[in-house]
Image (cartoon, rainbow, N blue to C red; front, side):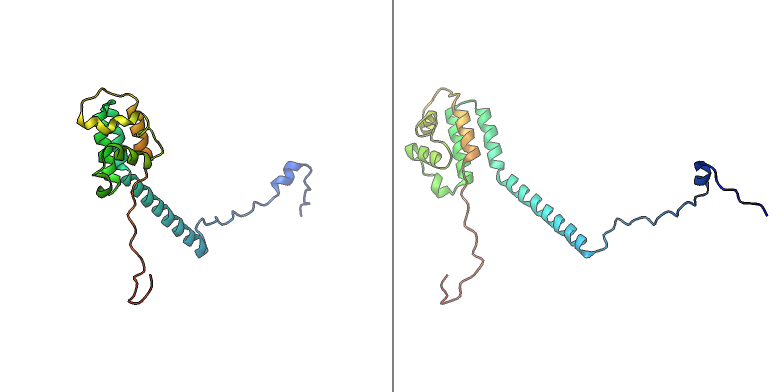
Length: 170
């Protein structure tokens, strides 16, 4: 029998250690239904957000087209007046916009945006511009673009979700 040698230094002691077994890999798959429900909820929320963004983006396409047309107009009051009229017809009911002219048209433009520069400023030239030749007005394009960006379009009333039965007060 051979006598066991006792380790005399740290390296010999480390050589006598037994290597531990590798642990079982941890699964990244959720084990509870709550995580799956949360993932589904987040996907639904993301889908709804994309749908709302796309709907809003499409609804504002007329604004982007109007801004580009105003920039191409180069300050021509007659052309800008036509663009403003077409934009208003796209955003509001025809019955509210089509018959407006002169001071009523300018008041409408002021009332539907954050500016009063149409009835009391440079924008006055759009009232008569389609009917007579006029010089380009360089300050008109920024006012028109501001109106296109800030006007609040008419929203049609939503359908009633509850139908009133005969004799029921709605």
